[in-house]
Picture 1 (cartoon, rainbow, N blue to C red):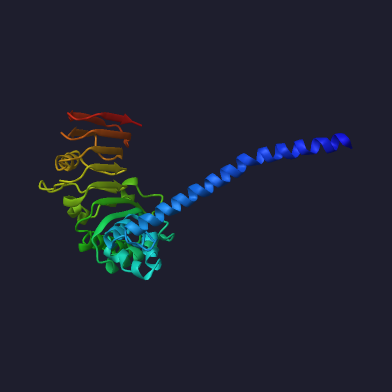
Picture 2 (cartoon, one colour; picture 1 turned 90 degrees about the vertical axis):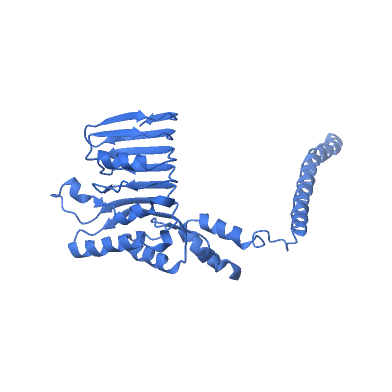
Length: 293
């Protein structure tokens, strides 16, 4: 009993010593948190704000933030507060018709048409992955006309980013692969003057394009599983005056692609031709990377 009684003060002393660093850490954390809150309050006072830094940002900055959100969340931002209600309509439209926006393939068609009618614009980005069309002739014609109306919409007059990939539904197994691809709507090419990024997939380019076709601002071009002739490909490249990045994958119905670009820096190639083909880089003085996947 005497040994136990004698040892107890030493144990209590050790526990007290061990608890001291923990108390110091808690005190340090509390002080750090207090300083952080003080800095936030000071910043709010210096800005003349009431402590809500986000809501006290100018409308033009809030609209820019909303324009960078996916469409689904941009629309939902209207429910944040009364002040936020007009922001989505006043911000440049970022229209991403992905499956997050709507899980039903054909429901996305009506939803995109509704947004293009309701939003005053302008649109900054238009993305629609796997545009599905019916094979039945009447439905096909209706949906093709709807696509044309989208790309002819004044809302897209100053579009900067285009990301569209096509596919067809309800085809029979007996049809050839060529018949399954959808022709690129001619109205898409009218967007050329303002595009900075273009990704186009699973469609047929026109067999001829206007010699005046011009992409003065296009910096990135991504072509995947498209049918395009050698002349049309050369015409597109010659109209790109600031193009830096080119991605090519599964190009169809062409035996040779010739690249001539004074501005290209990066070329990425993945399974370039559906059949046999030849790639010729004729002129690319600024080329830094040629990546073969």
